[in-house]
Image (cartoon, rainbow, N blue to C red; front, side, top):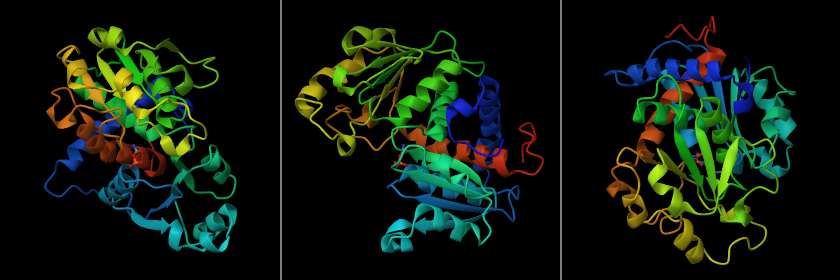
Length: 312
Ligand code: CP
């Protein structure tokens, strides 16, 4: 496989093998010197046309731990501000010798389009409302370790709560969680659901409180005010009253249940309780696991031999 554009590119077996490879990357990351020569001589370029804290820095760290060379492209100080097109930008940077582009773009489909203009591997780091496949993989890894589910998610009940409509994380995670066998419920006001859910392997609920005691994982999404072109919510306060994770709601979760959020979070909106005070919160584990998962993806796409069973 040359590119990672969507979770739909992966079979359930592929996801399992990437998560097993991530175990090796976690081991490497725990060494006193967390660095191996697996990708020496490879050049990984981060092209972020949208802001990012976690994804950008974790890909950069992952590439460095595998000894790849890295180049960070800052859109605001590039010739994009002079009107250079996406295609010209890609072809220009590719001419310097690039093995992989890690791409975030506000337009759904931009990473797929870029595959036509370069021979480098393209990794989708989030495109519009469409996909964020490495987020889904790191979330699967966090659940797999947090609930000791190495063999899959059969029987697990996962609720994804909030702004499903604008969420590439929801689209990726539903596919990944369902591929591993989980039962997924989307919980949101009707205005924050996609116009059509045909083909989504999910149930829908508008009643978070009724679901709480049954859940193994509650996955909160950020309310994406910047992507809302119309008033889809009466007010953030009302949203928070019905769907925000308060301390009282968290107390009704099963003791083993995990609380997850991809970040960045709106405190006081979808996350009312202090996540640092919630025993089930694995939000910072998600961030930590993001580095190892992205090491696995880079090794999988760029590693010589490209056999997933070959840990570096
Ligand atoms: N979860 C996520 O994609 O976060 P960033 O926008 O900080 O990369």
